[in-house]
Image (cartoon, rainbow, N blue to C red):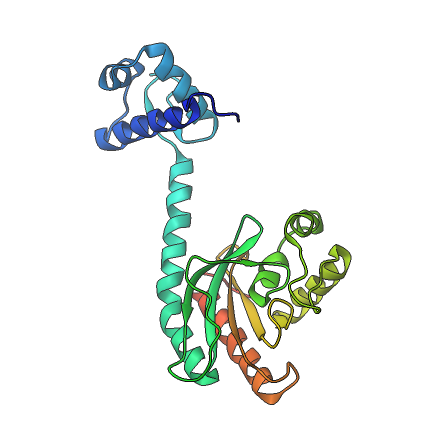
Length: 257
């Protein structure tokens, strides 16, 4: 939508004001009450409410015509709460992972085609690879990113590759077909490997964290200066990451029946 004189931004502000009024009232409100409370014409308020009703932000009683908050807001709130919960739930397991492997751990989710770091943990000693909380990492060439992409349809993966893919190192895969083939292996194995594709010499492993609907919501990973992906230390790290991710999935209600 093209912004003209800031109008779309003002419209969002007006919509938020209506939501605030409905939340504070703790009862259904009429168009007239909302119009009076905002000081805006009924036609303006009705237009905003109609748009909000279409996307589930408000609901209107068919008989009384009164407005209440919509179920979509509950869904948004549940999603936010789940994200907050996983960060808290993962804090101690991530600390234990870093202590056992002496490498950095990260918790990520998919955001606009990239891996958004929700939380990270670092061991107390040695040289470590740190991805700051809030950082966006490429999804197509990092372990946690590939875990998140593995849950998407091939068409979505192709779109992300076409938009984001670039060669960070000589090992970076930027071909969509090759990546899609690798993602099938990720789904079969239950984990993804990063082998110098984002930064030379850096290797990592990540596993999916699923919610109560079995959807892959997050990725838990270890990343650092592992010597080789076929080394005993890397295999041990892989086992620990998978075990920890499975435990966190169970904590979110996932059941592998």
